[in-house]
Image 1 (cartoon, rainbow, N blue to C red):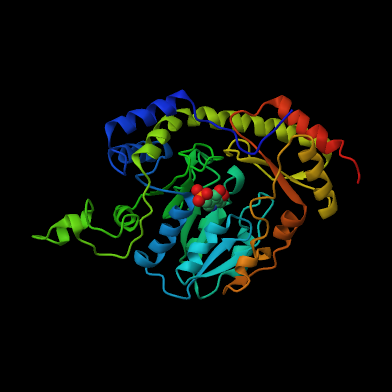
Image 2 (image 1 turned 90 degrees about the vertical axis):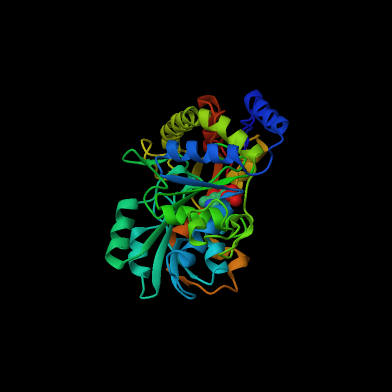
Length: 379
Ligand SMILES: Cc1ncc(COP(=O)(O)O)c(C=O)c1O
Protein backbone atom coordinates (compact mmCIF):
# COMPACT_ATOMS: atom_id res chain seq x y z
CA UNK A 1 0.00 0.00 0.00
CA UNK A 2 1.16 3.54 -0.76
CA UNK A 3 0.35 6.75 1.17
CA UNK A 4 1.63 9.87 -0.50
CA UNK A 5 2.06 13.36 0.93
CA UNK A 6 0.11 14.94 -1.95
CA UNK A 7 -2.77 13.58 -3.99
CA UNK A 8 -4.15 15.19 -7.12
CA UNK A 9 -7.66 16.61 -6.71
CA UNK A 10 -7.96 18.04 -10.22
CA UNK A 11 -10.23 16.24 -12.69
CA UNK A 12 -12.33 16.73 -15.80
CA UNK A 13 -14.36 19.58 -14.27
CA UNK A 14 -11.24 21.65 -13.61
CA UNK A 15 -9.75 20.79 -17.03
CA UNK A 16 -12.97 21.88 -18.71
CA UNK A 17 -13.01 25.16 -16.75
CA UNK A 18 -9.40 25.89 -17.79
CA UNK A 19 -10.17 25.18 -21.45
CA UNK A 20 -13.20 27.47 -21.29
CA UNK A 21 -11.00 30.17 -19.79
CA UNK A 22 -8.35 29.68 -22.47
CA UNK A 23 -11.00 29.88 -25.20
CA UNK A 24 -12.28 33.15 -23.74
CA UNK A 25 -8.90 34.75 -24.40
CA UNK A 26 -9.08 36.44 -20.98
CA UNK A 27 -6.14 34.82 -19.25
CA UNK A 28 -4.80 37.42 -16.85
CA UNK A 29 -6.41 38.65 -13.62
CA UNK A 30 -9.96 39.73 -14.41
CA UNK A 31 -13.59 38.76 -13.94
CA UNK A 32 -12.91 35.10 -13.06
CA UNK A 33 -10.54 36.16 -10.27
CA UNK A 34 -13.21 38.57 -8.99
CA UNK A 35 -15.84 35.83 -9.09
CA UNK A 36 -13.57 33.44 -7.17
CA UNK A 37 -12.82 36.15 -4.60
CA UNK A 38 -16.52 36.86 -4.06
CA UNK A 39 -17.46 33.21 -3.73
CA UNK A 40 -14.50 32.52 -1.44
CA UNK A 41 -15.39 35.44 0.83
CA UNK A 42 -18.99 34.22 0.99
CA UNK A 43 -17.93 30.64 1.76
CA UNK A 44 -15.57 31.81 4.50
CA UNK A 45 -18.03 34.24 6.06
CA UNK A 46 -15.72 37.19 5.35
CA UNK A 47 -16.64 40.55 3.82
CA UNK A 48 -13.80 40.79 1.31
CA UNK A 49 -11.24 38.49 -0.31
CA UNK A 50 -8.19 39.32 -2.42
CA UNK A 51 -6.59 36.60 -4.53
CA UNK A 52 -2.80 36.46 -4.87
CA UNK A 53 -0.36 33.97 -6.38
CA UNK A 54 0.52 32.09 -3.15
CA UNK A 55 -0.04 31.88 0.60
CA UNK A 56 3.42 33.39 1.03
CA UNK A 57 2.39 36.39 -1.07
CA UNK A 58 -0.73 36.71 1.11
CA UNK A 59 1.48 36.83 4.22
CA UNK A 60 3.80 39.35 2.55
CA UNK A 61 0.91 41.72 1.84
CA UNK A 62 -0.54 41.33 5.34
CA UNK A 63 2.82 42.28 6.89
CA UNK A 64 3.02 45.23 4.48
CA UNK A 65 -0.43 46.37 5.63
CA UNK A 66 0.75 46.36 9.26
CA UNK A 67 2.98 49.27 8.28
CA UNK A 68 1.09 50.86 5.43
CA UNK A 69 -2.40 50.79 6.94
CA UNK A 70 -1.94 50.16 10.68
CA UNK A 71 1.03 52.40 11.42
CA UNK A 72 3.67 49.95 12.67
CA UNK A 73 7.19 51.40 12.57
CA UNK A 74 10.63 49.86 11.88
CA UNK A 75 11.72 47.84 14.93
CA UNK A 76 8.20 47.14 16.23
CA UNK A 77 7.73 43.56 17.37
CA UNK A 78 5.38 40.91 16.06
CA UNK A 79 4.85 37.73 18.09
CA UNK A 80 5.00 34.52 16.03
CA UNK A 81 4.88 30.79 16.79
CA UNK A 82 8.24 29.02 16.52
CA UNK A 83 6.65 26.14 14.59
CA UNK A 84 5.27 27.35 11.26
CA UNK A 85 6.23 27.68 7.63
CA UNK A 86 9.15 30.13 7.19
CA UNK A 87 7.07 32.50 5.04
CA UNK A 88 4.92 33.39 8.03
CA UNK A 89 8.03 35.02 9.47
CA UNK A 90 10.02 36.25 6.45
CA UNK A 91 7.58 39.10 5.63
CA UNK A 92 7.96 40.47 9.16
CA UNK A 93 11.74 40.65 8.73
CA UNK A 94 11.42 41.87 5.14
CA UNK A 95 9.36 44.82 6.44
CA UNK A 96 11.94 45.75 9.12
CA UNK A 97 9.77 44.46 11.95
CA UNK A 98 11.17 42.16 14.63
CA UNK A 99 9.77 38.64 15.08
CA UNK A 100 9.46 37.37 18.64
CA UNK A 101 9.42 33.58 18.66
CA UNK A 102 6.93 32.10 21.12
CA UNK A 103 6.66 28.47 22.16
CA UNK A 104 3.76 26.30 21.00
CA UNK A 105 1.20 24.31 23.00
CA UNK A 106 -0.12 20.74 22.69
CA UNK A 107 -2.05 21.69 19.55
CA UNK A 108 1.31 22.84 18.09
CA UNK A 109 -0.08 26.40 17.90
CA UNK A 110 1.28 29.56 19.51
CA UNK A 111 0.99 29.21 23.29
CA UNK A 112 -1.02 31.95 25.04
CA UNK A 113 1.26 31.50 28.07
CA UNK A 114 4.34 32.16 25.99
CA UNK A 115 2.63 35.16 24.36
CA UNK A 116 1.89 36.70 27.78
CA UNK A 117 5.51 36.19 28.80
CA UNK A 118 6.98 37.71 25.64
CA UNK A 119 4.81 40.82 25.17
CA UNK A 120 6.93 43.97 25.57
CA UNK A 121 6.51 47.73 25.10
CA UNK A 122 7.60 47.26 21.50
CA UNK A 123 5.09 44.50 20.70
CA UNK A 124 2.40 45.70 18.32
CA UNK A 125 0.92 42.57 16.77
CA UNK A 126 0.50 38.80 16.96
CA UNK A 127 0.74 36.66 13.83
CA UNK A 128 -1.15 33.54 14.90
CA UNK A 129 -0.97 30.41 12.73
CA UNK A 130 -3.60 27.68 12.70
CA UNK A 131 -1.25 24.75 12.21
CA UNK A 132 -2.12 21.51 10.41
CA UNK A 133 -5.84 22.30 10.40
CA UNK A 134 -6.27 22.95 14.13
CA UNK A 135 -7.31 26.47 15.21
CA UNK A 136 -5.05 28.28 17.68
CA UNK A 137 -6.40 29.30 21.13
CA UNK A 138 -8.05 32.38 19.68
CA UNK A 139 -10.12 33.38 22.74
CA UNK A 140 -7.01 33.57 24.94
CA UNK A 141 -5.01 35.28 22.19
CA UNK A 142 -7.72 37.92 21.65
CA UNK A 143 -7.73 38.58 25.42
CA UNK A 144 -3.99 39.32 25.34
CA UNK A 145 -4.52 41.51 22.27
CA UNK A 146 -7.20 43.50 24.07
CA UNK A 147 -5.19 43.88 27.27
CA UNK A 148 -2.10 45.07 25.41
CA UNK A 149 -3.56 46.91 22.41
CA UNK A 150 -2.15 44.40 19.92
CA UNK A 151 -3.30 43.74 16.37
CA UNK A 152 -3.98 40.18 15.22
CA UNK A 153 -3.18 38.52 11.89
CA UNK A 154 -4.08 34.90 11.13
CA UNK A 155 -2.14 32.53 8.89
CA UNK A 156 -4.78 29.99 7.83
CA UNK A 157 -2.73 28.47 5.02
CA UNK A 158 -3.01 24.97 6.54
CA UNK A 159 -6.50 25.38 7.99
CA UNK A 160 -9.01 26.41 5.35
CA UNK A 161 -12.46 25.71 6.82
CA UNK A 162 -11.36 25.17 10.42
CA UNK A 163 -13.90 26.67 12.83
CA UNK A 164 -14.09 28.13 16.28
CA UNK A 165 -17.68 27.89 17.48
CA UNK A 166 -18.97 27.81 13.86
CA UNK A 167 -16.95 30.87 12.81
CA UNK A 168 -14.32 30.08 10.22
CA UNK A 169 -10.67 30.94 10.81
CA UNK A 170 -9.46 34.13 9.14
CA UNK A 171 -12.31 36.11 10.68
CA UNK A 172 -10.83 36.73 14.13
CA UNK A 173 -8.05 39.16 13.27
CA UNK A 174 -7.60 42.10 10.87
CA UNK A 175 -6.73 39.78 8.00
CA UNK A 176 -6.34 36.06 7.33
CA UNK A 177 -4.19 34.33 4.69
CA UNK A 178 -4.86 31.09 2.79
CA UNK A 179 -2.81 28.90 0.45
CA UNK A 180 -4.05 26.95 -2.56
CA UNK A 181 -0.80 25.12 -3.15
CA UNK A 182 -1.18 21.62 -4.58
CA UNK A 183 -1.24 19.71 -1.25
CA UNK A 184 -3.73 22.01 0.46
CA UNK A 185 -7.48 21.63 1.08
CA UNK A 186 -8.24 23.04 -2.36
CA UNK A 187 -5.76 23.94 -5.03
CA UNK A 188 -5.35 26.45 -7.82
CA UNK A 189 -1.95 24.75 -8.44
CA UNK A 190 -0.27 27.81 -6.90
CA UNK A 191 -2.40 30.49 -5.27
CA UNK A 192 -3.44 32.31 -2.16
CA UNK A 193 -6.11 34.55 -0.67
CA UNK A 194 -6.39 37.25 1.98
CA UNK A 195 -9.69 37.89 3.75
CA UNK A 196 -10.61 41.00 5.70
CA UNK A 197 -13.73 42.78 6.91
CA UNK A 198 -12.11 46.22 6.62
CA UNK A 199 -12.95 48.08 3.41
CA UNK A 200 -9.87 50.29 3.42
CA UNK A 201 -7.55 47.34 4.01
CA UNK A 202 -9.26 45.50 1.15
CA UNK A 203 -8.82 48.49 -1.12
CA UNK A 204 -5.12 48.86 -0.29
CA UNK A 205 -4.47 45.11 -0.62
CA UNK A 206 -5.84 45.16 -4.17
CA UNK A 207 -3.48 47.98 -5.12
CA UNK A 208 -0.52 46.49 -3.24
CA UNK A 209 -0.78 43.19 -5.13
CA UNK A 210 -0.87 45.08 -8.42
CA UNK A 211 2.01 47.59 -8.69
CA UNK A 212 0.38 49.99 -6.22
CA UNK A 213 -1.94 51.39 -8.83
CA UNK A 214 -5.09 53.37 -8.17
CA UNK A 215 -7.07 51.71 -10.99
CA UNK A 216 -10.28 50.09 -9.72
CA UNK A 217 -9.77 51.22 -6.11
CA UNK A 218 -11.94 53.38 -3.85
CA UNK A 219 -9.10 55.95 -3.99
CA UNK A 220 -9.89 56.88 -7.61
CA UNK A 221 -12.10 59.66 -6.25
CA UNK A 222 -9.08 61.26 -4.56
CA UNK A 223 -7.67 62.15 -7.97
CA UNK A 224 -10.38 64.02 -9.92
CA UNK A 225 -9.50 64.91 -13.46
CA UNK A 226 -6.58 62.48 -13.65
CA UNK A 227 -6.32 59.33 -15.80
CA UNK A 228 -6.67 56.52 -13.19
CA UNK A 229 -5.50 53.72 -15.50
CA UNK A 230 -1.81 54.49 -15.00
CA UNK A 231 -1.85 56.33 -11.69
CA UNK A 232 0.20 54.97 -8.76
CA UNK A 233 -0.13 56.20 -5.16
CA UNK A 234 1.48 53.52 -3.00
CA UNK A 235 4.47 51.17 -3.21
CA UNK A 236 3.31 47.80 -4.48
CA UNK A 237 4.30 44.40 -5.80
CA UNK A 238 3.04 42.25 -8.62
CA UNK A 239 1.60 39.27 -6.73
CA UNK A 240 -1.41 38.71 -8.97
CA UNK A 241 -2.81 35.36 -9.94
CA UNK A 242 -4.64 34.68 -13.24
CA UNK A 243 -8.12 33.86 -14.48
CA UNK A 244 -6.81 30.38 -15.30
CA UNK A 245 -5.94 29.67 -11.67
CA UNK A 246 -9.19 31.22 -10.47
CA UNK A 247 -11.24 29.07 -12.85
CA UNK A 248 -9.73 26.00 -11.17
CA UNK A 249 -10.43 27.56 -7.76
CA UNK A 250 -14.12 28.02 -8.56
CA UNK A 251 -14.55 24.32 -9.36
CA UNK A 252 -12.51 23.29 -6.32
CA UNK A 253 -14.61 25.48 -4.04
CA UNK A 254 -17.65 23.35 -4.91
CA UNK A 255 -15.77 20.29 -3.64
CA UNK A 256 -14.41 21.90 -0.48
CA UNK A 257 -17.12 20.92 2.03
CA UNK A 258 -16.86 17.30 0.91
CA UNK A 259 -13.04 17.35 1.10
CA UNK A 260 -13.14 18.78 4.62
CA UNK A 261 -15.70 16.20 5.78
CA UNK A 262 -13.51 13.33 4.48
CA UNK A 263 -10.40 14.82 6.10
CA UNK A 264 -12.21 15.28 9.42
CA UNK A 265 -13.61 11.75 9.45
CA UNK A 266 -10.17 10.34 8.62
CA UNK A 267 -8.62 12.37 11.42
CA UNK A 268 -11.11 10.97 13.94
CA UNK A 269 -10.15 7.46 12.81
CA UNK A 270 -6.44 8.29 13.14
CA UNK A 271 -6.94 9.60 16.71
CA UNK A 272 -8.79 6.46 17.79
CA UNK A 273 -6.22 4.14 16.16
CA UNK A 274 -3.21 5.97 17.61
CA UNK A 275 -4.44 5.27 21.16
CA UNK A 276 -3.06 1.73 20.75
CA UNK A 277 0.45 3.09 20.22
CA UNK A 278 0.71 5.16 23.40
CA UNK A 279 2.47 7.86 21.36
CA UNK A 280 1.61 11.54 21.60
CA UNK A 281 -0.18 13.17 18.69
CA UNK A 282 -1.21 16.75 17.92
CA UNK A 283 -4.07 17.76 20.25
CA UNK A 284 -7.01 18.29 17.94
CA UNK A 285 -10.66 19.15 18.48
CA UNK A 286 -12.35 17.05 15.82
CA UNK A 287 -15.39 19.33 15.75
CA UNK A 288 -13.21 22.33 14.84
CA UNK A 289 -10.40 20.93 12.74
CA UNK A 290 -10.05 21.03 8.98
CA UNK A 291 -7.39 18.34 9.13
CA UNK A 292 -4.24 18.85 7.10
CA UNK A 293 -2.05 15.97 8.28
CA UNK A 294 -1.50 13.27 10.90
CA UNK A 295 1.28 14.36 13.24
CA UNK A 296 3.04 11.95 15.61
CA UNK A 297 5.56 12.62 18.38
CA UNK A 298 8.01 9.75 18.90
CA UNK A 299 9.82 8.92 22.14
CA UNK A 300 13.09 10.54 21.06
CA UNK A 301 15.04 11.56 17.95
CA UNK A 302 16.40 8.04 17.30
CA UNK A 303 12.90 6.55 17.56
CA UNK A 304 11.63 9.20 15.11
CA UNK A 305 14.38 8.49 12.60
CA UNK A 306 13.84 4.72 12.72
CA UNK A 307 10.05 5.11 12.44
CA UNK A 308 10.27 7.57 9.53
CA UNK A 309 12.62 5.35 7.53
CA UNK A 310 10.49 2.27 8.30
CA UNK A 311 7.36 4.05 7.07
CA UNK A 312 9.14 5.28 3.93
CA UNK A 313 10.49 1.79 3.24
CA UNK A 314 6.92 0.50 3.39
CA UNK A 315 5.37 3.06 1.06
CA UNK A 316 4.26 5.78 3.50
CA UNK A 317 5.64 9.22 2.69
CA UNK A 318 6.46 11.21 5.83
CA UNK A 319 8.05 14.55 6.58
CA UNK A 320 9.03 16.81 9.51
CA UNK A 321 6.28 18.80 11.23
CA UNK A 322 6.08 21.86 8.98
CA UNK A 323 9.66 23.24 9.32
CA UNK A 324 10.37 22.08 12.89
CA UNK A 325 11.54 24.72 15.36
CA UNK A 326 12.24 27.60 12.97
CA UNK A 327 15.15 28.81 15.06
CA UNK A 328 17.04 25.65 14.10
CA UNK A 329 16.84 26.79 10.45
CA UNK A 330 20.08 28.46 9.26
CA UNK A 331 18.10 31.23 7.54
CA UNK A 332 17.30 32.97 10.84
CA UNK A 333 20.85 32.84 12.22
CA UNK A 334 21.67 36.38 11.18
CA UNK A 335 18.22 37.87 11.85
CA UNK A 336 17.28 40.25 14.59
CA UNK A 337 14.72 38.55 16.86
CA UNK A 338 13.71 37.81 20.45
CA UNK A 339 12.73 34.37 21.67
CA UNK A 340 11.11 32.52 24.53
CA UNK A 341 12.41 29.16 25.75
CA UNK A 342 11.07 26.89 23.03
CA UNK A 343 10.75 23.59 24.90
CA UNK A 344 7.71 22.23 23.03
CA UNK A 345 8.98 23.42 19.67
CA UNK A 346 12.24 21.57 20.36
CA UNK A 347 10.36 18.33 21.10
CA UNK A 348 8.34 18.70 17.88
CA UNK A 349 11.56 19.36 16.00
CA UNK A 350 13.46 16.41 17.48
CA UNK A 351 10.70 13.81 17.75
CA UNK A 352 7.90 14.78 15.38
CA UNK A 353 6.85 13.78 11.88
CA UNK A 354 3.66 13.69 9.87
CA UNK A 355 2.02 11.87 7.01
CA UNK A 356 -0.52 13.67 4.89
CA UNK A 357 -4.30 13.73 5.12
CA UNK A 358 -6.32 14.38 1.96
CA UNK A 359 -9.55 13.59 0.12
CA UNK A 360 -8.33 10.10 -0.90
CA UNK A 361 -7.60 8.96 2.66
CA UNK A 362 -9.34 5.75 3.83
CA UNK A 363 -9.58 3.92 7.18
CA UNK A 364 -7.56 1.07 5.58
CA UNK A 365 -4.67 3.41 4.75
CA UNK A 366 -4.68 4.81 8.29
CA UNK A 367 -4.81 1.30 9.81
CA UNK A 368 -1.83 0.35 7.63
CA UNK A 369 0.25 3.37 8.70
CA UNK A 370 -0.59 2.94 12.39
CA UNK A 371 0.21 -0.78 12.31
CA UNK A 372 3.60 0.08 10.76
CA UNK A 373 4.23 2.60 13.56
CA UNK A 374 3.35 -0.05 16.16
CA UNK A 375 5.40 -2.81 14.59
CA UNK A 376 8.42 -0.71 13.75
CA UNK A 377 11.70 -2.60 14.45
CA UNK A 378 13.67 -1.18 17.38
CA UNK A 379 16.76 -0.45 15.28
C1 LIG B 1 1.47 27.89 7.68
C2 LIG B 1 1.84 28.24 6.27
N1 LIG B 1 1.95 29.54 5.93
C3 LIG B 1 2.27 29.91 4.67
C4 LIG B 1 2.48 28.98 3.68
C5 LIG B 1 2.85 29.44 2.31
O1 LIG B 1 1.93 29.08 1.32
P1 LIG B 1 2.40 28.92 -0.20
O2 LIG B 1 3.10 27.61 -0.31
O3 LIG B 1 1.12 28.95 -0.98
O4 LIG B 1 3.28 30.05 -0.51
C6 LIG B 1 2.38 27.62 3.98
C7 LIG B 1 2.63 26.63 2.93
O5 LIG B 1 2.33 25.48 3.02
C8 LIG B 1 2.05 27.24 5.31
O6 LIG B 1 1.99 25.95 5.65
